[in-house]
Length: 383
Image (cartoon, helix red, strand yellow):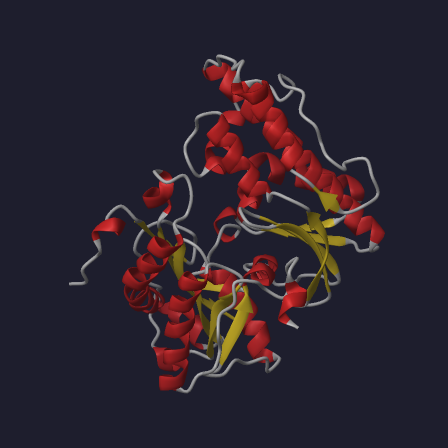
């Protein structure tokens, strides 16, 4: 029996079958026969605090996926501790690979290739996934795709979606990224705009801390915002009326802090539960306004008729609702992954890996993970 280090006793293991149900599952005979006719890619994701493994057929159909979350471990710290996250991946990954193969009813020999999130991310966390993928690829003689985590968030739109129209404008909004991209194929996106300071998910976490709410802040603020009044507080929307694709969440975050704590923290408000709900609703409305308005502007500037959205913030219920209505009104095709494929997951890694393997974009045994990626603000440093 595998021993789990004491610092990870609380991590959650979630098994998702092909239909998205939570719990252990095994494919039926018909599903296994169908899987045998597809090109199967095993994806590994370990860029931050989620350890995930998935098997995806033809870049679209998720046969099996398993995620081990460390979110509960880091709630006490109010954020991810990189060294502990890396150790958690080492403890979890071997068992997850075995489980996803068993869940899909396939052997390593049945795979058409492997894909691993190689950048950007926490270097210690990335090393675990990259090392495991290289070892399997070398031992089994399988092609390996080194996947950009940010590009994979946009490739997640291909999961359970047979027809995706390019070119399109993409938005990746997460705890570490909030940027806009223009792409003409899976994995071939260039950044065209985005935040100049905080990411949207980071802003949610900091706002939640201001309100005395738990980490991670996004999910709990989403739930409480549904019970509040978004007009209860007046909060700024930086750059919302200009013609650039810039985002900034420092202003709205600071404005919330000053309204709740007072200047220099000397005149704090006393909020009851309804007041906290109102603050969540007002803050969420401001963030969503900025993300949606700039996405529509990006589509207009670049004259595309389709947009895609990914990243953990794309799980936000208000953002999903606003995207649906706003894109419909603008006559745009919206590609929005299921919530479980918006947050970090291995299915999106496998999906993009499929396209890269098909194009012959392969990594060798000398693959080295990088903390920054080729689709982010610091992409020039990789040249």
